[in-house]
Length: 107
Image 1: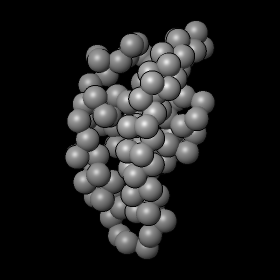
Image 2: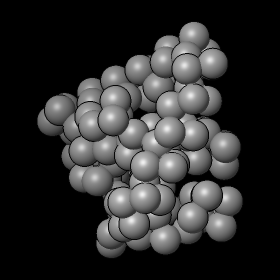
Image 3: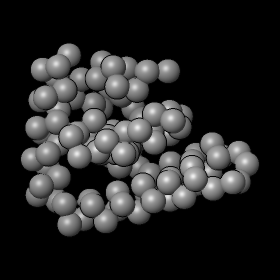
Image 4: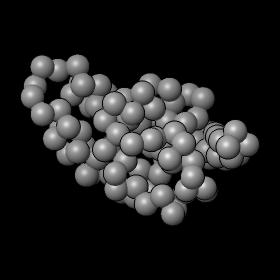
């Protein structure tokens, strides 16, 4: 499984290097919305996290997943683990290896 993670991480890092201007701004925005909801005193935080997630396309969820397991996505990963329903609509068949999802985002 370590080899699969390394392959996925390298592929994602190569991709995001070429598109970081577009991706980083988007990921920072989504992360900061999630962080705001997480740190706020509002009730039913899961509802608001699902609202954010519902605005994301399948491709964006896939990028979010790979960003989370990459070396630079630790904060994304930690928040996504807390609200593990955040990736509930991710079609794992579209991942490089669907087993990767279960390894990094167990239920």
